[in-house]
Length: 435
Image (cartoon, rainbow, N blue to C red):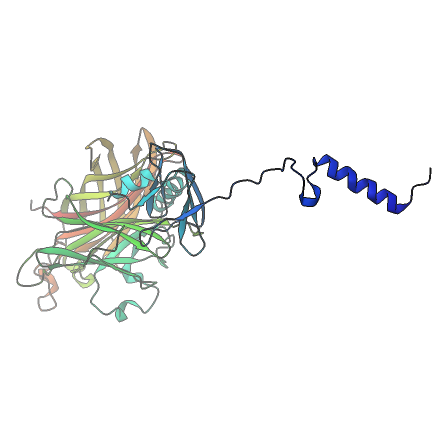
């Protein structure tokens, strides 16, 4: 039988209508395929500076996670939560689920905050600690730009051990720390000499940043310290500063200021974290006075810093320790040890004895640098250390060099690491003991 095209189309149309149970033509009463329910999105207020990346965050009921600069939590009684963050920083949540809560995290010490981070950032910071521990110490007198004399104030002299200072004679992250008394408290200011970045603690930063007092290390009760969290456009900068500056009518003519820091990149920031430590002072020992100093001098003081264990992921600890140095000015040598390293919060023992190996006292500078050896968690560790002499005492530009006495103090930094093991960096301040 011959079928014309017109008949074929007529039969095909009839067949489709029958398959749809009389749904064609609008007059039938057959079943229709239901459409999925539309997702209802409800605006979700966010705190300023939340730092949430664009995308979707899904949480089970009762779960809580840190994202960006805030903590996102889902009520335990109810359905799971879904937060949608737009490219412009606005947010909403799915109405069919629970209503999430977004808030700043409670202030936490640097180590506690690092331990609350996701595994990948923790591993990255630990890796930076390891590389910084074996980085040569740089002196601020080796600043590679003309920025230092143009910085707008008299900056202290000091040493830095940081991620970008692999070449101590051409440092990229050279920093000094100043301190002064304001309204009964100590204010710190730190400048990165090569880049001009400044940080000061004169006022509390915007949330979730914070400024909090911290207890001094054991054996350094005269030190005063703060911890500072600064939210930068690209991440978080945690810093701990200490100083022995004295309060009085006149500025302290001879003080030390030291500290350490860790910067973590924010969401969608394709940069590695960085860490560092620095020690500075306002009365750097004059090179011209070194020729008038002889004999030996012993220096004793305290150290502080950041320690990472080899756990998976790493576990971080703020630590305190004691330091002892012996300078032989006749033999142009200095050496020492950092001992009794303990967790600043729990007082748990972390390490016992890191040797600051003998370093030559230079004839062209009053700073020095050398190597570190010792044990961390029962394994051999190596690293670098360095320091600067401070405290000219009676020796001034008006008094002959023959009256020069041994420097009154030493400030410096140190680091140690075990390959695929524990690692640390820190700063110290030590004072001449009268024999």
